[in-house]
Image 1 (tube, helix red, strand yellow):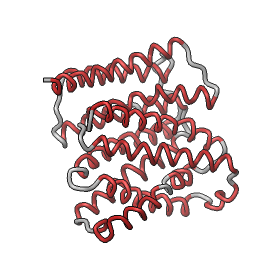
Image 2 (cartoon, rainbow, N blue to C red):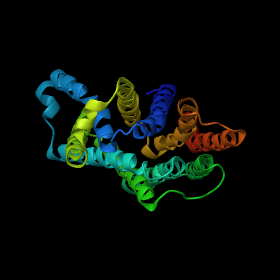
Image 3 (cartoon, rainbow, N blue to C red):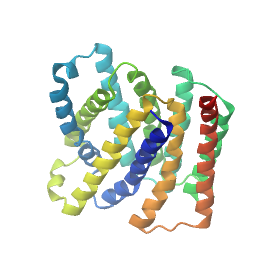
Length: 297
């Protein structure tokens, strides 16, 4: 895949994921149950699963036991755990603290990729990651390094970060042997099953009947962009890109989330925030610099 196209795809994915923060917060404020919300936003993959089944026929189910285990693990660590823990956690902790903790996901991912995927270590990647991390912390905390919110909510958000990092390593290995479309659909199927039964067990599923048109519209946007388009583009790019190199772009999520929050929640953006955003972008550029130079040789 051409570099420009890969960057365009991952940026679209990042922007879509950034949109999920204000959307989730709005839905939670409108009394949409957290697990129910997670379940509904992944309904979009059911038609996709049917399409792939019709397109590939029996071959879509002709996988090894190892592949099915991969689907199951991804369903747990990519869909079920992070969505449930993040949605519930955001009810008990502040938005800024949630963003700080979420921004630690690439750190866990890079460490795991170094250990299990034997990905390359270089000075630019490490320094860029540190600079971007500093920018994210300053951005979401307003320049005051504090950990507000309750311990319960903070712990749940941290669990979602570690879960995403684990899923990234499993995903990278899975893409070496399994079609991206099959990975995406079957992992979501398993994750959806867990979410569905969790909704039945812990929440009142009948509240769905009380949702108004506006609520369904927000859920649809969340499903189509944050869960659907973003995931597909991310998987396509990940096939030919180092996981630790790609995950650095996650640091851009708070930057775009601030913009969406301004228009959707009325939050203001100061010059200080713009400075912190510049730190994030600088870190991403530095982390990508070494790989660009090697490709140019």
